[in-house]
Image (cartoon, rainbow, N blue to C red; front, side, top):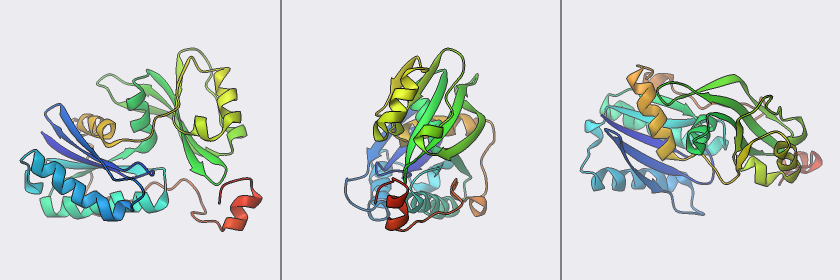
Length: 230
């Protein structure tokens, strides 16, 4: 099975190719828009593996949550490639791919949402390697992030480093922490392979980014007035 994965929900963009369990990945250049670098990187990745778009069995993409522009880049690119290859799309949540990257069994994924807020979600590993969301994905100020009950939880994501007060709260409950984790295409494509085997692909026309906020854009003044970043 050949699966291409695209992940641009944060400043760290990437793409990856799954070939029957073997994964190769490319990282987007820093400080350049993903809209300029992602597709050339995909062409490079496929060419290195001797793979054509028409050879793919599915295309996965990071559906969100994350940076709104980045989510649209991955979704749009995945749709265009899926139509060209006539293959299904597999949307994968960025927080779930963070959980997979952490390798924890019970994971609290925390992604910096900017504007003084954090995306958060609780995940537990299922048989087969996928992760199940427990509850719902939330966006909230660091002081209102729900913390896990019980033992054996691992916390991961840049929400821990972006908000030191949150890090201190999590230290009191989580058994371990991996603060440097961001969504990456290699972890995304491993989850996509499990979902593809379950028949969870969708038609390209159904694909849409996962937006958690009701208001997707605020002015600089609004962000600063709420204690966020410009």
